[in-house]
Image (cartoon, rainbow, N blue to C red; front, side, top):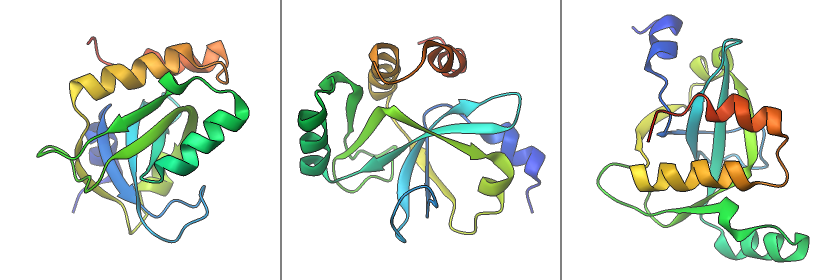
Length: 144
């Protein structure tokens, strides 16, 4: 059985984890793209949704930059069944212990390098994220 140390060691930028997320209003597992883990055992993630129309309406009503909404397409390296969207301005913080003990959590692949580059770009241009937050997360990204 893996230990929490093994779990921490395995966390990788771009990995897709599925789990029931207490930070959203749903009892269904959602895909989450991992953005990395900091020195305080905080895992940064983006929660995915297949509800494009809802996200589009939200972006239009709030005058947000569409480049911060990244589409992830189904392919052989991820577990996505239909086009999924992540909002690069809505970064979630998860405690590594909470994730490790979340019984619904499963690792099911990763985003492509092109999608990871789009996510990185979306974080960089987001008007809603503070620069200190951007810097903390972007330093976790591998050299692309």
